[in-house]
Length: 115
Length: 113
Image (cartoon, rainbow over all chains, first blue to last red; front, side):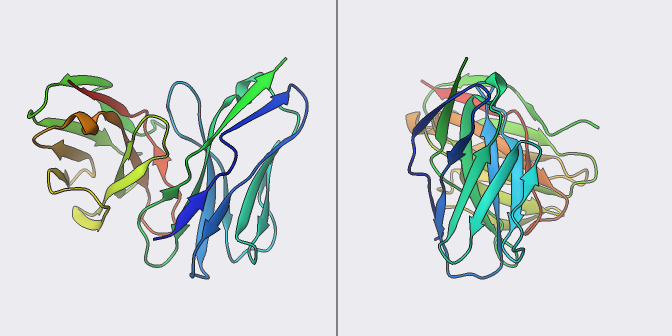
């Protein structure tokens, strides 16, 4: 089974600063996709960003961008100009394009944003 | 457009009882997936259904079952509840299945006493 590892249980960032959350994954597949989801205290899982493995260009969504290193099997999330509303659990998830139905999630990183 | 909806929001049961959780996908989405999220962990995949057929199953016992209806809504059933079944149960919908982004509902929080 594919595994997703988030090595940072907790991270802290000051408002307006930049923070990077790490994620590594293990797979033998070449065609897959990766996500970052945000889960605030309300527990609703919200999609932050998506990256297809075949795309070399890193995905960006406003203040959120990823650094996708396919050879290293690394998929980090950069949050720029951090806001208080960014405080949440962030989960990295892996899914396969052709044969997989499940998303495999990491254990999450708790992000604290301080004023 | 309405997002994924789930009912009930909270539920308290005792060991040995049975529970049914419900999910309505985003309009136009044909696939529904169920996940279990234990406190402090990431979600774990339970089932995926597409066009009323089971398309994937995670490593969960047979006490867990699900079905999908013609309107693409879905139910998750858990029999003979154990204390360890206490968790947040998340439903996610997608247009098709593999390769499609899954959008999550707010979840049902189940407490087994």
